[in-house]
Length: 538
Image (cartoon, rainbow, N blue to C red; front, top):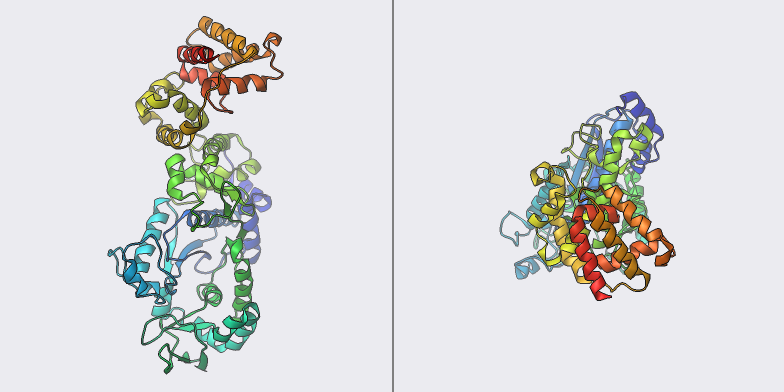
């Protein structure tokens, strides 16, 4: 179904999908854009490597950006990935080499500390390169901007003068939010020591705001008067955030619930500096399998590398898409459903009317980055020949004999032209199914013995399969299974009980696939062998 630009624009203006809800608020402020393009920003602290939180924030911001472009009929936009690399190193990360060397540079800006990996000119340069590689890997369309470049080049100088000119007003905003001890040393501007090179947390006196001159006491006790411009000072975090919004002209930035208070204070400071707080969404944070907050210290999260070992990039985007204001449990158990749901929603796109299409997560995901032609391009209704969940069941039954070659040999029972080259998406998922089964499914499988009426029902199923043509369709095989489960002599209170018995005795799990599809994929004779093995345990 082809959708006209006029219908698309009309539907976007009242769509309830959250990216369009965000875009509608931004369009009220900037209905026709602005010179240089409407600016979306996402921030990054380069003391660590990019992670799944980095991915979700850039993805969600990109979704709003694309929705705004649709809503405004193609108004120009830009996305900046901003690295706060003039920040001082507060502690030595535990996962990097040369820790003793880094310890010698505590307090110094990340961009002025040697690279512990000995590959780049600074620690920040290394991690910034990792960020760019990370974003490029997923095809995001962005501009990289670093704090050090902005401070050192003078790009932030006018905004810094405004901070100095409004020094007391900013203190009036910030001091009531701080504890007594912090108030004694707090300054909106943090000078960089001329003797140690460290970012100093000391009181600062403004000598000449217009010239950018400040006075402070250095670490050695000497009183220093120097410029705050040109990279010789940086702003405190909340002031820095506000100053950046004003200096760069940021129109939209989302952030996590943990930064809610920071956003409030930074918004007030932005207004003092003569600007406005950007539009933005406050999103909920990820939780682990127990519903607890994910912590780097506890190591209870799921890394993006782990997700991509067991699931696809698209499935991760699909899982992240759902209501960002609700907390999500992030663990391996959510991956199989996310993979299958992605493909289900992708297959639905061509037949959907405009309103449903704009509410389809995959429609948004296919527009999110520079890699895709767009959600209405040919092939976006592509389907996956075998659901990932069914693939996992097949791998689980194959057990120790499960290999890529073995899986593809069985796929020949179910998929026309069962050639990996003809089905690249499915082929990629074969490797992920093997990994997922190895690490999460196989250790938990335990096939129980059938009992009571289950024994007779399994014998009836075996007899029916023995009489069936090897080419019987998945639907007809499903009907055979249904009819046996409905027979009163076997004593099942519901078909649910019958299928649960099949899963537990044949597959070793409490849940499973449509049995007709599984039998068609695995083959009638191999399924009969599973039944024989189960009956032998009775």
